[in-house]
Each structure stands twice: as C-alpha cells, then as structure tokens.
Amino acid sequence: MHLKILVSIIVFLLLTSSTLTAENKIDENHAPILEKILKATQLIDEDLLQSFLKPLVDFAPRYTGSYGCIKAAEYIYTQFKKFGLNTRYHNWSAFGDRYHPRLYRSQNIEATLEGVDDKIIVFNAHYDTVKTTPGANDDGSGTTAVLAAAYALSKLRFNHTLRFITFSGEEEGLLGSHEYAREVYSRGDNIIIEINADMIGRATTEESGNQIHLSISEDAEWVEEIFKEVNNLLHLGFNIHNYSIDREGRGWSDYFSFVEYGYESIACWDAEHDPNMHTPRDNLSNVNFSYLTRYTKLIVGVLVILADIEPPPLVRIVSPQIGYLYFDGMKIKPVKSTIVINDIWIWSETISDAEKVEFYYDGKLQMVDTTKPFKWHCNKHSIGKHRIKVIAYGEGGFTSTDYIDLRIINLLLKK
Image (cartoon, rainbow, N blue to C red):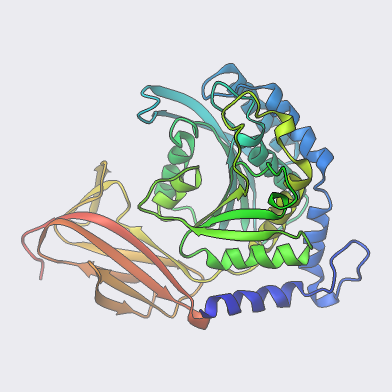
C-alpha cells in the first residue's frame, strides 16, 4: 500500500536524525519539530508520573458518582488549569449497561490547547474505577499519561488543536465518553484522530516491558506508522503489535464511543494481562513506572507530530447524522437509529484535499464527485435498511472510508 511509504517519507523529512538526545545538534531544516519533541519528552519522567498517579490512587475507589470520583475530577481539573489550558467540566447523565441498570450522573474533564486551525487531535483516558480497586493501572496509568502529556505540550504551540480528556462512566458502559462523542459529533467538531490510553502501565518481565499493543481503526494506519517512527526516533525499544478495531463489534474502552460515530481511533494498551485488574491489588506496586514513562514519551512524541503535520484526506459523512429522523431532507428530531423519510442528499467532507469521492448504496457505486462540496442525491425506492458508503481518494494512493446505516422509507421518487 502506498500509504506506509507516504507516511514514512513525511516523517523522515521531518524527523531524520542519527540519534535524538539533548546533546545532538539539530539540523536547521528539522529544528522546529525536533525541538518540540525534545522539549516535550524531556519533561516526562518517572517522578512526574508518580506525582500525578499517587493522588488518583489516594482518591480511590473512584467509581462513577462516588465522592472519590468527584474528588479525582476536581484534582484533574485543577491540574489542567495549572497548565494554563482552557478547561471545563462536561456534565452528563446516562443509564448504565445491563450490568449497571441505573441512572448515573458525573462529569468528564476536558482541557484544550488551541491550535492555529480547527483540526483537533484528542488524547483521552478514563479516571473512574470499579468499587473494589485503587485503579492504579486501570486506568490511573492512562489518566496519568493524559495529565503528563497536557503538562508537557501546554508549553508549546501547534498548528492543530489538542484536547486532553478524562472520562468517567467507563466501567458502567462507556457512559461519559459516549455522551461526549455524541456531543462533538452533533456539533461537527473536526476531529482528525482520537487516541485512547487504557491500562498502559503493567510490565513484570523484560519481554513484556518491550511490547505494546495498539488497536487501530481502518483509516488510522498512517498514525500507526508515526508510532513506529517515533519509537525508532526516541530509541524506546518497543515492539508494536497492532489489532484492527471492528466498528460493528464490541468496544472494550472509551475509544469505541468515538468509533461508533465514525471517528478514527487508536487504542493504546500494555501487552501483559493484568490479573490485578478490578481488585485491591491494582495499587501503585502494580505499575511499572519505567515502562509507563517510555510509553508516555511515545504517545507525546506522536501527538507533537500529529499536531503539526497536515493529515491525509480523511472523509466523513456530515449529513445525514447518526441518530436522527429526517423528513424531506430536514433533520426533525433525535431517534435511536437513523431514519430517512423520502429522498435525501448525502453530504461528505474531507480533512485536507481529496481528488475525488465515490458514493455507494449497498455496495454499488452510484456517483463519483470530483469537486467540493462532495454530495449525492439519494433517491431510491425503498422501505428498509441500507448502507451508504463514501470513499475519498488522495495523493499517493491513500483512501479513506466512512459509512452510515439508514432506514429509508421512500415510496414516491422525486424527479
């Protein structure tokens, strides 16, 4: 696939250096991005991560809605504000999954580092726990990485906007992240990629200490290549194992809330099964801080690059939107599934320029649009469920796909 070659060339041109240490002389052509990576990652050390994780563990258990969860939220909010970031509580209420059949109310914490343009990179973790655990690795480790990244990157400025988010309600069915993803989707936020960190701190052997797992959505392979390049650049020594995210399957962490709304995602995990998860043994001794530090440096380096380079032409169907009833092309009200009565125009947008966008109806090509705005008039005789898919094509053979499932009732075709 041309994509890997394209990304490798981009990253090589930006980052080429024999070894990357504070003592190296940075080539003038690569100085801006290299200096940002150096400045940010040199701030990440074990002492910093321990200083963030210990208070979170002290507030445990942080199960959603509890006093410990509220105090942890206040602590995270205070840290983000100290970094000078635009910080807010995102309050939500939702019913839990079948194992938690009750109404929950809680808050996510969002901190924003504004960029030059409106493109957004999201880095998130969940700060809640189950009732039986201090939650050091699950997911104090991910929350600590988010705090450390926010601290280091807040001292720099980037082309794109960075959002650092900690969610509650994850253990009850991805509640906080689902409400957040639904909000930003309805608002039309221009999210390039969401990176989720959940349990990234356990490594009890030399072998597991050199392994990481990434779960990757279909159009995020180019970001995986950046992970590999930064791993080599910083000499972190990780073997990176990748797995595909199934949009129609089951999600195991907050990344899936974004995937359900069509966003691209990479979920970061440690490579070792954690027998202490959801037990009183998930305390500070369950976290390998050397491993967590290296992992956090890797993510921070990736965020630096993502926040400054132009992304490929990722495509999104922007209308109709998931979870609404449409009548004669007009959005009427929220519903559980997406329902269209009569005909409708399918509108898609691309992040960065695309050469063309193809529109498919149940797998059959209907139209190729080569000029913005990319759209197609869906006027098919129907009373049933159909899948609309779009494929955008960019330079170097890059392709990006999005789809939406619609229940269409259209008996009288428009001419």
